[in-house]
Image (cartoon, rainbow, N blue to C red; front, side, top):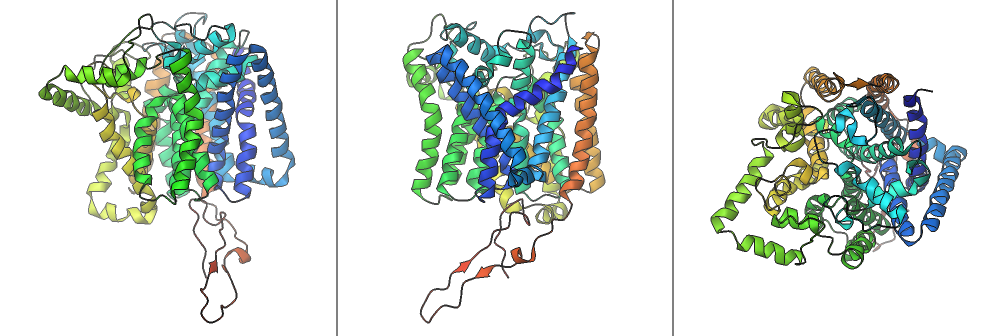
Amino acid sequence: MPAGLYSPLLLLVQAGWLLAPGLVAGAELARRDLIARYLVVPVAGVVGAVLSYAAVWIYLASRTAGETYSYLTAVLAVAGVALLVLRPRYRALLGSVDVAAPLILLYLVTLFLVTATFGCTVRPVLNDLNEACHLTGLTGDNVLPQFFADNVLSGHPRTPIWDWQASARPPLQSGAVLMQTPVTGPGQFHLLGYQTLAVLLQVLCLPAVWALLRVLRLSGYRLVAVLTMFMFTGFFVYNSVFVWPKLLAAAMTLTAFALLFYGRPARSMWALAGVAAGAGLVAHAGVAFTLLPMGLLLLWRLPSWRHAGLAAAGALALQAPWTAYQRIVDPPGDQLLKWHFAGVWQPASGPDRRSLGETVADSYGDLSLGEILHHKWTNFSTLFGDRLHGPHLAGPGPLGILRAEEMFFVLFGLGVCNLALVPLLVPALRRRLSLVLDVASLKPMAAVAGLTLVIWPLVLFGPGDPGTSPTIFQGSYAMMALLFVVLGAVLTVLPRLATTALVVVNVTWTTTLWVVLVWAGHHAHWSYLMLSGASWLAVLAFLWCTARWLDVPVKVPAQARTAVVSPAPAAGQVTRRRIVWSTQRDPGRRRPLRR
């Protein structure tokens, strides 16, 4: 059998293993009206992340216990699939657009990206993952989670990886690899299993973006237009196949954002949001730049301090064990933080024993006020593009530079979404915003993204070295996703023909620059390439069908169209209206239905 034909089945197994238990949990929460349907898949991702994170600690304690845990999670996944298929309520929920569409897109997009990666190699036979055409030109950070997982399996988790301490990078993706050791461990599917699972983890960002777009109550056409413009960008494509877990961190953080800002104000849901935020931090700490402004804005809409305490406890439950491991088992564990915030690089062989605060104070103490201001100004200018001194991505020459610019700089990374400034500056178009989307829901997204854009360049040390200045990959990918959602939604105010033209240009440009031209002139593996082309067509076809599916009116039972009002009160009593919440009528945002 051609190697590429294993990919669809392997992906199905790994996706079910990762998501099935969480889908049952999300379906039950939706059945109890604690979350909207569009949050079922993102919540499933959070549950899968927690199960993966537990694998890190169990394998660290004992390989035998870890392998037992892996098989137990596989059995749990099979049981979850059985429940989803056999229980009518769960089965009906899976068939709804807000659950089925993100799941199908998750599968198809992952399949397209995995097969596109393995369809082209720089050598006739792939012996190392970074010999794939798409993965050349950058560091080897994409395989660090695999190396850490391998070291844990061998019983030497503190082994340095190149110049990095093993404890310098958060372990969530390594945990997913450990949980699925029967597939990702040594054997026939070692490379394919790791890459497939890791791409799936990055593409979990799509269901979270879907949820935010549903919150905005966009029409089906507009939602799919924004989603397509996000998916078909160099930012999304490259960071999905170059599997450092930054989009995974964004997926967890955006799920926390949706739960906190748009979910039910139940204490249990705030605790779940805290767990999602903690999962984001143990995937990649860059999302802290977005979690900080999220926390600041929540102070203005905090239901109670008990809610805040539960959210903080949920986050600490995930972050605290890893922080303790860094400080006690493999100290100091702050190698990356000192590089970003103090401009101090120390190899793993000779870690800097100063505390992070001391290192930052010493670095800034050596600079004059003018030099500090120059550093920060250079940081802000980097957001809009600067002279590129970095590598060429996925190939040499001008095309490699174009790809690197989209990867490094916020202005170039946003692509056609930069044109959202046009409707914002034209009064007639700006007035139409409230007609096509929920402006009140858009504002927190814009505020968090905007505050991140201010905080991030101020905090990073800069300038010059990509590790200390705000290139995209040194920041929060949750911020980038929010920018795509906000700017893309604003763009849909344009006439439909103009929006369609932008989508077509975006898809054509990204497919050509980031896929077809990367394949050209290298060793082709046709079983993967044919499957990649077929899945690309399937993605576009399903997006078109989804736009029509979303715009189909939902029939609401007559009894759900009116509120249930308690009997008339006696004299002097306070009237209390009982509200019926209908998630069918308004899936984007729950609103009380009154007579």
